Structures are given as structure tokens and as C-alpha cells.
Image (cartoon, rainbow, N blue to C red; front, side):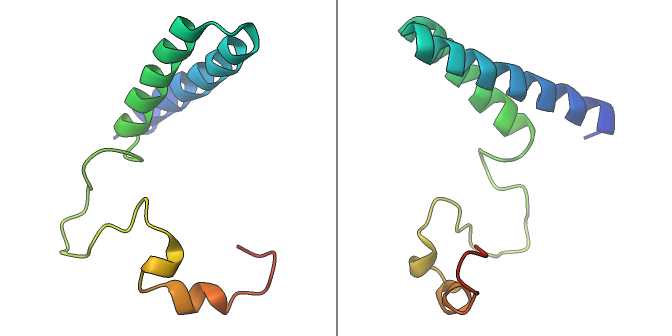
Length: 83
């Protein structure tokens, strides 16, 4: 992804997040639903959601509690408040 394309999707994401906040304040459920869909689209375009983009054979621990991953002991060793 080019820097220009990435910047485009970041702008789309930020605008959609603002729209979600506005919809939440006005309790406009249809606008909130539309904004959520746009957030999801932008996050997928940025590689933050959707299928994993790497192919080195390592497992995807996204959406796992840290205590349920091989990184649990490392996380426990971090100084408090640094996570």
C-alpha cells in the first residue's frame, strides 16, 4: 500500500469514528450502523482486520486474551502500568 493510499484510509477511519460518536450522541442507530461498517472497511484496508497478511506460518493471536497466548509470562513480567 502506498503512503497516499494509507493516508486516505486513515482519514476515512478517523471520519467514520467521528460519525460513530455523533450517532451515539444523537442515538441515530442507522447512522451508527453505517459508520461501523465504514470503520470496518477502513480497518480491513489498513490490515488491522480481516485475514492475516503474513504467511510465515505463525498463529494469529489477535482477539485472544494475553493469558491464553505464549506471551502470557512475558506480559506478566512487564512493570505495572507499562502495558
